[in-house]
Image 1 (tube, rainbow, N blue to C red):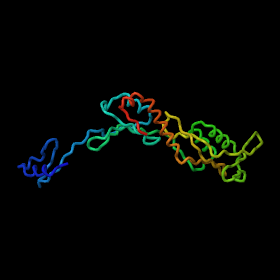
Image 2 (cartoon, rainbow, N blue to C red; image 1 turned 60 degrees about the vertical axis):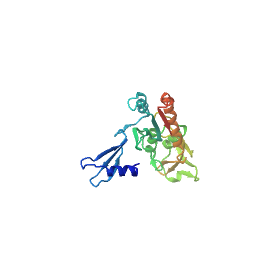
Image 3 (spheres, one colour; image 1 turned 180 degrees about the vertical axis):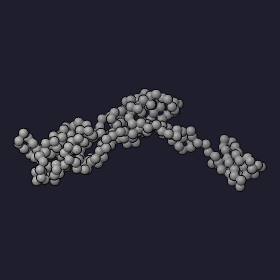
Image 4 (tube, rainbow, N blue to C red; image 1 turned 30 degrees about the vertical axis):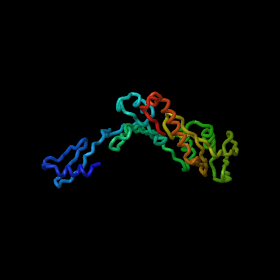
Length: 246
């Protein structure tokens, strides 16, 4: 902070027009043609461009290689289930360096929309990990008898549909609800969190799933990422070079 005495000292000094910079102790000041004084504060030297990665494996390899900021402590911050940041400590000028940004590559999930049986089954197999309820949905959607909506029973909570039970016979099957599914929603290196979904069917047949846990799966996913990084970077965390924040 520039004191009144320092301002007065600079203003009373016989400074020539060409002498625009003045050092006073460990501070540097600039003076304009009108004699106004402004302190020039140094800026921290930080990376202009962060590295962008898509896997936790790449992040771990970077930290263990210890190529940059060798003598500095770093913060590893899990921003959300799909993003992790490697940052520096707060610098003297208030800035914070961001070294790495890791963003998971994930299939786009379309919840709350009705899809035809074939598209719905393809989505279940390509965007969800194998769980008992996923296999049940695949079986139901793959064997539903095409017909009018009158073939679907609905009591508001659960539904029943007519499915193929043999070459020429049909049987009524109750659709499970809710179902526990585990879509790909976080980094592939960690276990995908399972959560309840509401499964509904419409004439077509068409199927849709709706998230039913209020987003609680995100806390599980963040904890899974934290556990993975703690295991992979145990020595760096123990040496206090890395501080892990979730």
